[in-house]
Image (tube, rainbow, N blue to C red; front, side, top):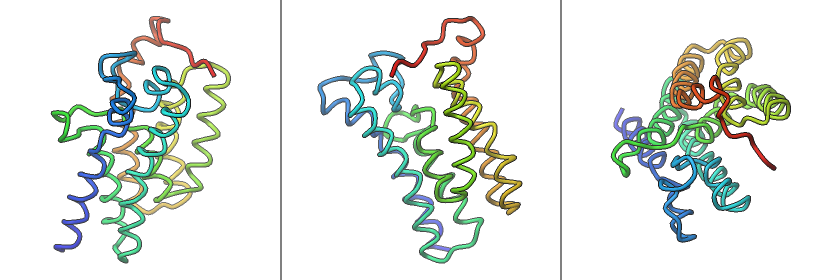
Length: 194
């Protein structure tokens, strides 16, 4: 049980590393004061360009993937594997390093889901791409993909711990996008420009 608790603590701390903030600061920008003010990959991309945005996406994704893979490597049960992913996700969304104000969790959730249910990620990624391609809204693609994950994971795996954590993460991703949802409804949300 000690190893499991240490893994969860480590996953949370890894998830708490504010990748976008650190990369933006290295470029001389406080990402919290530019664009949307969010520390995630979309705002970093819009503010600092493709390379820093992609680096943020990859870094945030790895924060979710590494704890899941570590738990699998250690031979933990589905419950602990799923909880390791959830801890990393919560670390990103509620980072201890920024007063428990983090990102929206999309890239970190992607990493968690890549470790838990890679086939489901392919399906959700297809949904994300289709929504963004037709609407040009990253937020709408993220929300739609998040909403799709629980039923897809339930259908493909049916393993209760994975489904449960997927539901929690999906709900939190959608919750963290509540301002985007308001802007989408008002027609004021920023569209993605490649």
